[in-house]
Image (tube, helix red, strand yellow):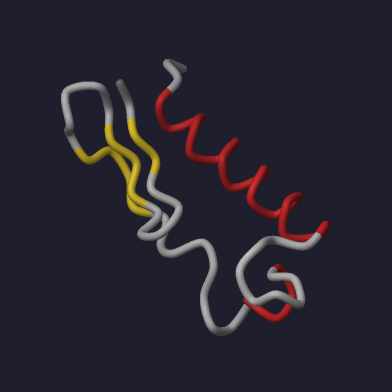
Amino acid sequence: MPFISSISGSVYDAAGTLLDTQGAWITSANAASYIGGDGVHPNDDGHVYLARRVVEALRVLMPA
């Protein structure tokens, strides 16, 4: 099963081979824009941002 880490931005194939490293998705630089008032959960903009990052990561896993 492939694995995408939203913490490190690493994308692994089903064999565990690192295919790409996109960098951390939520950082101190963007947390204020994407994390809600509780300091934990994404706000609406954060959900859109995370969805776009997932799509980018999935593209790495898909054959051309």
